[in-house]
Length: 239
Image 1 (cartoon, rainbow, N blue to C red):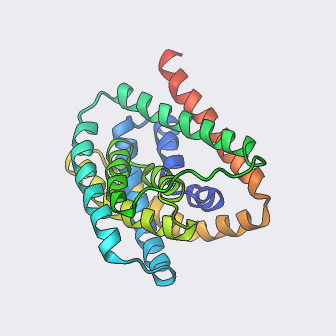
Image 2 (image 1 turned 45 degrees about the horizontal axis):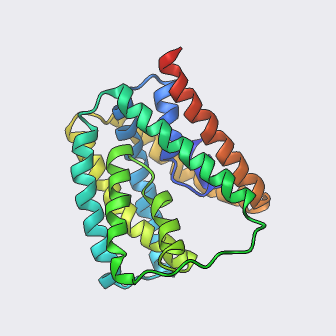
Image 3 (image 1 turned 45 degrees about the vertical axis):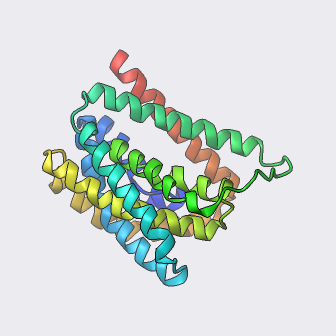
């Protein structure tokens, strides 16, 4: 199910898997994030390999981004594994809420004339690795969702190049984050690895369905799902 939804919405399955593991299976937030990483890493490795065959990158550009991202992931993941589960869940819910609101606002502004902000020099792109790596370390997800719009909107990269750079950032970060969460005992391998196998089998079906549906409807459904999930996470502690 998670692989199918991830393929349909064009995202990694982790942002759906973490609330599912936390809310439906009752896992603590850190355990849910670590177990989700066990599912994501094989899928990301396959996606990165396939994408690099069609969109090869200059390693002089992608390597500094990846190295800074890994550094940020290591430092922030150590902090995340020591946070109180309720605090970590609140941060994750706030991230989902902001993501949902941003997606809905983008849909409303889609008919407006495109703005052309000044482009920053590409030499600053490695700093995006710090931002994306921090998201991966703290939340176990979100590096690509944060990095891709920055690469396109601030640095003027084409969408395909931005997605390739994001994969170069997210894939090694997810591996390092998985090792960090695993060493802290926050990975349930007996759940994460079968989920990875299921995700690899069903993600293609989700992508195929997404190409037959109107893009606007798919994005609205994704934003609505994230909004409801964020509210559920925030209200669960109160209720």
